[in-house]
Image 1 (tube, one colour):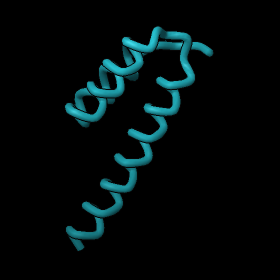
Image 2 (cartoon, rainbow, N blue to C red; image 1 turned 60 degrees about the vertical axis):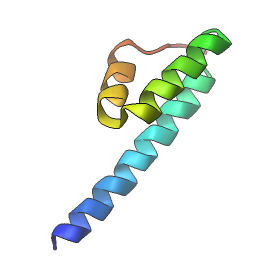
Image 3 (cartoon, rainbow, N blue to C red; image 1 turned 180 degrees about the horizontal axis):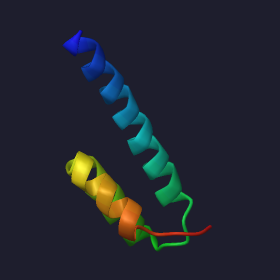
Image 4 (cartoon, one colour; image 1 turned 90 degrees about the horizontal axis):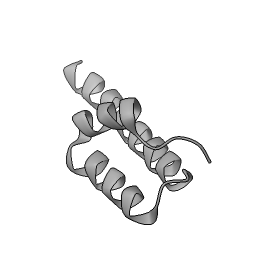
Length: 60
């Protein structure tokens, strides 16, 4: 049963990372900032998503 929760959480995490990357790429931030934000989300998975959610680029 533990493995099922791990799989579900993994899929949820992947969906959040994809959503964050699409949002970052669609923002009005400069290309350099977009690259840095995406790297932050990919290199530090949980912390990067939290930081992006709180302070990431907004708007289109």
